[in-house]
Length: 109
Image 1 (spheres, one colour):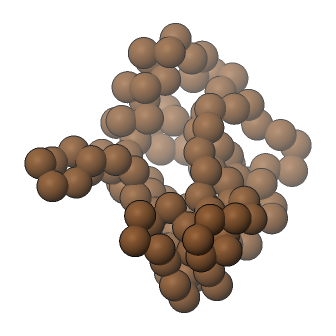
Image 2 (image 1 turned 30 degrees about the horizontal axis):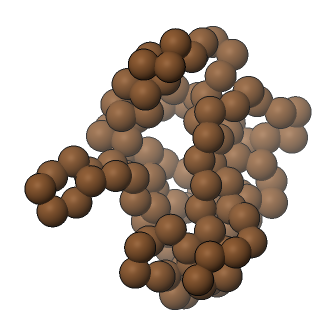
C-alpha cells in the first residue's frame, strides 16, 4: 500500500514548485504527520529533499517523500486538490482516520 496523489494534486504541486523555481531532480513534496491539532494529529506538507529512510513515490515527474513514522498513519491515503467556488485547497483522504476535524487538517486513529 502506498500514498497516492490525484492528477489535480500533482498538477498543483508541480505548478507551485515551478513558481518557486524548485529543482525537480533533487526536491519533491514531503508529506508529514505531526502531533497536535484539534483531533490529536495533523497533516503537513513541504518541499524537501529525500532522506535515506524515506518512502519515495513518483507521480509524473513529482517525487513524494514520507518518513517511516508518518507512513504508518498515511498508508493508503490519497492527497487531492480542488479549486472550485465551494472548495479550494489540498485534502487528505485517509482511510486510517477514525475522526477528523471540520477543517480536514487534523485527525485521530
